[in-house]
Image 1 (cartoon, rainbow, N blue to C red):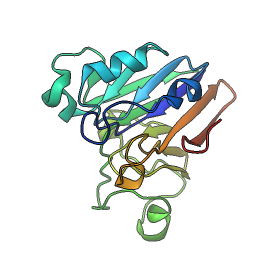
Image 2 (cartoon, rainbow, N blue to C red):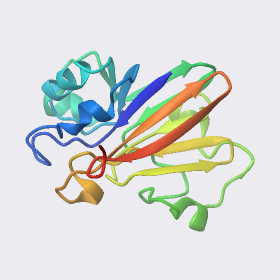
Image 3 (cartoon, rainbow, N blue to C red):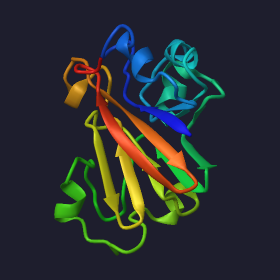
Length: 186
């Protein structure tokens, strides 16, 4: 299964609309997972023209997505034998900081052979965690957990310019993720 990952679209605010290149970048995805800060159901409707959409984000319900059934605070799913958890702001107990690339490996102490994410965050152990909040793209393996932040397509590293998304390929044999820089995508 090919999954498009996106977060922190911040529409309106960060931009007035999604970058037009997004449709080409998400071509062929089976579903889109949005890790929050979407703000309007219209943005989700636009993404759903490409593929079915699920969103994680508690603020999104308050800021314009109302009772949109695509939006839940936390999403947990099993795909091709992989347990995936998605949350907007991944707060790891004992870490107390935003998660940026390389930061966990440098300063966070945890059992490196198991899951970096306590079971109580998603209600079970997940082997893939998708999150947003920092607008900074990141793919890192920690123990048996793949952490993915697709960044933001509209607020690259929290500045108003075209940014990033990610693609997650899942099979019964494995998982692979890649960041797509929309500014250089052709």
